[in-house]
Amino acid sequence: MKKEDIHIDDIWRILNGNIPLEFYIELFIRALVVYLLIAFGMRYMRKRITAELNRTELAGMATLAAATGLVILAPDRGILPAVIVFLVLLISKRFVDNKNYRNESFEDLTEGHMSILIKDGVLQLQEMKDTRITREQLFAQLRAKEVIHLGTVQRMYMEVSGSFSLVKKEKSTPGLAVIPDWDKDFLKEQTISSDTLVCANCGTLNEKKLNKCTCCKSNELKEALMDKQ
Image 1: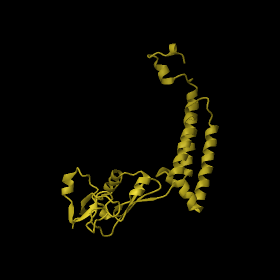
Image 2: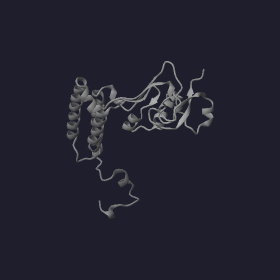
Image 3: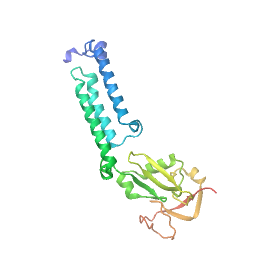
Image 4: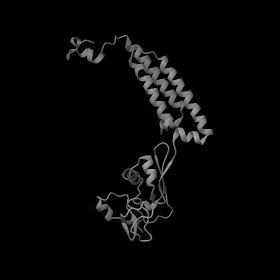
């Protein structure tokens, strides 16, 4: 389109562009075909595709979206290439699923592995670094699950899908608070274990009254919180 053909008061051009009116009938057909293509693909990839996507499913849906986007709006693009991409995705997905079922090493390669972020009330700092999860991000997940301190946590997993799973202890112990330091009013409402200190960096109990944490070597200590009796 040339510069002299652009006019700010040309409402019809702004709304319709240069597409002939006959293309709207074709547009309806294209949109319906692409919709059915994606709907069938989601069903074929099973119910997980509508819940939490793993790596291969996310890659498949992103590829399908990229292949079908122009098909709907571009009159010079045919539907057949999108159908071919769709078939390739389905075949690849079936192959990967079957291979994952038979080979755990291959599944770990394609889907990744689960990480333990908290173990027996102690932050696993190296796992957090590897998964790029900060303390505040992890504490936010714990607060969402109504956890006040780490002493109630047996395990905190980061699943392959990126979701978090919490396993609580049957009997809690004193632990590091997950409440922000600036929320002093809420902290005052909690029960403090005055005779128990924890590492402010990883949450390890300082049972031997040392100046440094035996786990991460940090010298910053805090009073532990405990469940209300």
